[in-house]
Length: 137
Image (cartoon, rainbow, N blue to C red; front, side, top):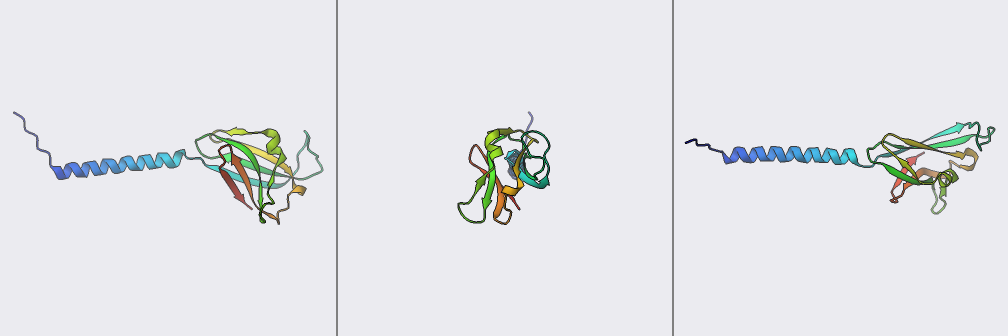
């Protein structure tokens, strides 16, 4: 007859190591799969063609999905330094809600003369769930 002896201390150490590894893997999956939206802007651009005046300079606000989860951007605009003087870019209302898949981006264009950088605190994008993503100036 074969007899197997299992040491309780070794079994508990093994279980602790395995559960810690599973916890770390799950934590990394959570961090890796969360929404990760980045906003950036570029000033003093000329836009040729379309409905844009080639004599004006434009601000381009880029919304980029750096995460793995798709996100639908509802609108973009800015938050001012003073309360209740915020704005929405008309370009985001015309384009409507846009889905951003992993690694994709959307550009929104606004006439730079309409943006007073001294009064703006940050640019902002909103998704359909209502989350807010900011880009400081």
